[in-house]
Length: 491
Image (tube, rainbow, N blue to C red; front, side):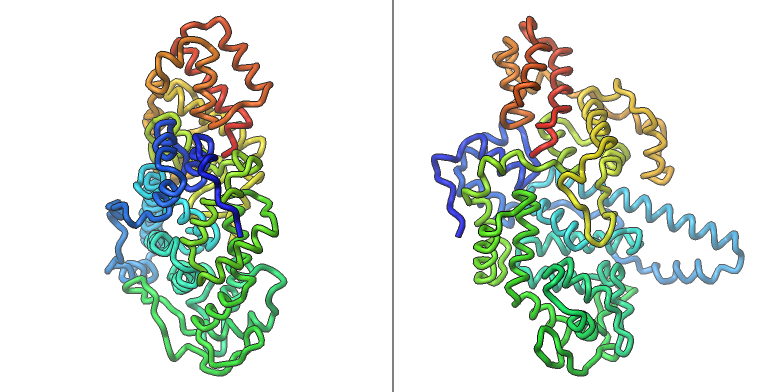
C-alpha cells in the first residue's frame, strides 16, 4: 500500500502541488489557505466536495426541445432545395452558438466554480469516455453527458461506467442506439473493453461479439433526448463472455468487466497518469489497484489515498507534467488574478493550443503529456501569455481568421479588443518590489511554485539588475519572461 505523507512534509510546495493537480492552480494566498488546513483537511476539502454548495445554473437552452422532432422533420420535408438549405444553415448556426456557449460555460465552471476537484475529475472522464460534437451533433446531449460525468465523478466505477454506457451521447457516438437483435453493432463493445476498462490483450474477439449482443435494446427517446430500453430489440439468447455463459444484459456484462482485477489496474493506471505522472511505477499501481478493487471500485477512496500519499508528493512528481491547454489557461488567470478572456478569445486559445472541449481528436481522447507541446503550440503559449498580461496592447497576427474558424464566423472585430491588461502592481507587496532578489523570489513563488533553472534565473537576474525599486514596466516584462520558460509549462 502507498505510504502516507508525513505531516512534517506538508508545506507550501506540497500544498501548491495538490492545488495544481486536484484543481487548476491558484494564487499564493490560496496556496497558503490550503497549507493552513493541513494535509488531511486539504485533501478532504477537495475530495468531499459535496459539502460545498454549487448553484451553477445550466445554460439557458439546456433542456429537451419539444420542437426538436418537428424541426428535423420540417427540414427533411422541405420541397424547395433553397428553403431546405436555409433551414439547415439556421439549425447549424444555432448549434454552433450553443456549443460555443457550452464550452465557455464549462471553462468558467472549472475556473470559478466552488468545487475544483469535481470539475477536474469531470475533465478526466471527458477525455476517458471521449465523445465529440462532430459525431453526436447535439449540444444538449453533450451538456447532459457532461452533467452525467460530473454527478458520477467520484462514485464507484461501475456506477459511472453504466451511466456513460447508457448515456444518449455515447449511444450516438459509438452507434449503440443502432444495435439490435440479429444485427448487433460491435463499436461500443470493442471500445468499452479496449479503451474504457481493460486495455488491449485482456479480452478476445468472442468477448466483443458476445457482449455486443448483450447491449442490444439500448436506445434513445428522441422526444425527451434520454435513454430508453427497447425490449423487442434485445437479444435474449445465451452469451458467453470471459468464459461465463448466461442470458446476460448489458449491465450484467459491465458488472463482469468491473469484477475483473485488470479493470481496477487499468483505471488506476489511467488516473495515475492524469493526476500524478506519465510513467506509473508498476508496484505502486499494483498496490493501488488491489486496494481499489477491494473497496468496491470506490473512486473517492482511490483519490483520497493518492492525494494523501508520499508517492504523490515525490520530488520527481512535483512540477513534472506538461500543463494541458485547459490547465495552462485557467492556472494562468488564477496566478495573474485576472478574469478569463472573453468567450471568443478563450475558445480560440484552447483550440489553437490543442484542446477544444467536446471535440477530442478521436475515441481515445487527447494523448496529453509531450503531445501538448509542438513548435507552433509553444509559440502560441508565449503569444497568449503576452495577451493575458498586456491585454489589447499585444497584437496576435491572424487571430481574426482563427476566431472565425472556431466560432463559425460568429465574431466581430470588437471581440479582439476586450482583453484588459493585468494590474501587475496588485500581485506583489512593496517589500517584494524593493529589489531584484526579493522580486525574483516572489515571481518564482507565484508562477513556478518552486525555483527556475540556473540559466533562466540568471537571465531574469540580468534583466532586473540595477532596477530598484521595480517599476510596473519591469514587472510586466518579467512576468512575460517567466511565463515563457520551460518551468512554467509544467505543473
